[in-house]
Image 1: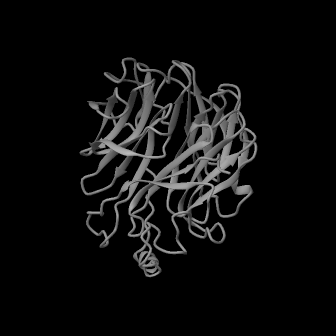
Image 2 (image 1 turned 90 degrees about the vertical axis):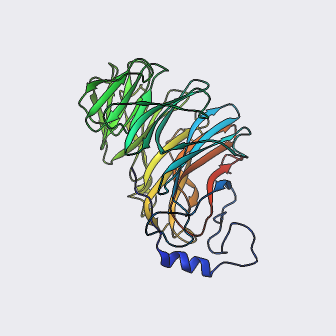
Image 3 (image 1 turned 30 degrees about the horizontal axis):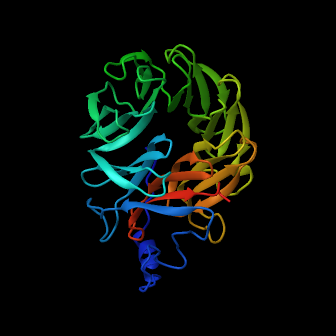
Length: 369
């Protein structure tokens, strides 16, 4: 799991001192604003965060949360938000108007590790619960779940269809041919991320390497070695593959993962971003797209963004060039989706603090303009 940012009590107290007592918005000061001095994206408050109830939590601190998308179809979007309380849980929220408004429709004990949408209504997931990991199925877009045992200690699942999928574990790779009812170990290779292209072809990453399997995950062939650790894999509607990594690096393949080329590195355009992880992609069409970046630590990106923790990037040319489209001091972005034309949504982690009471999503209705 990635580190959850911890903000010191001194910073919290100094921000509270700057509050305007007559301001009834969720913006505690003019110097630390919810709009973050930018109007091309807006925050949407999904729900309130509970107070943190673990030992050592400061008075008034809100619990850290990690939010991710789990389902999207037409105007309906479903997301979850892990709440890292003494007894961790996850709340599931739904929007039926492209992310403009949200309501809670379900919750689970434990926290989601990874989810995978299968078709129109089915979602598969891993959850951490009572010290172990379970495999879950939902046939109504995340509203209700059936949880099953799964071997080893998986941290990611990837499915080609409702039956065929693999799970990545610390001791290797397991395969299922019946939608997770049973699993068989097929490889001792360890990967950090995998993406199913079809029933037999998978793309995987480990460290700074990209691998491909053409036999359902049993064996893997090295296809590319990067200069940076790699984090995520994305495939556009046009079939173009993108891999993101540290230093905001972008690697692309037009050949179903056989040939790769690094086309961008954020660290060459901006200083201080070598520890920035490119965590997700979203191509709106064949040319226009977005990507999310998260920092492990607060990073000075220049006034007024001297405590940046997340970025949204934009490309107008299929990933050849990227520019920063949004800076955030609130959210460590790890997910982004396009739902309708110019509407794009991004979300991620929020650290424990006593400033922002809500769970927030960042949204543009103007393609970031």
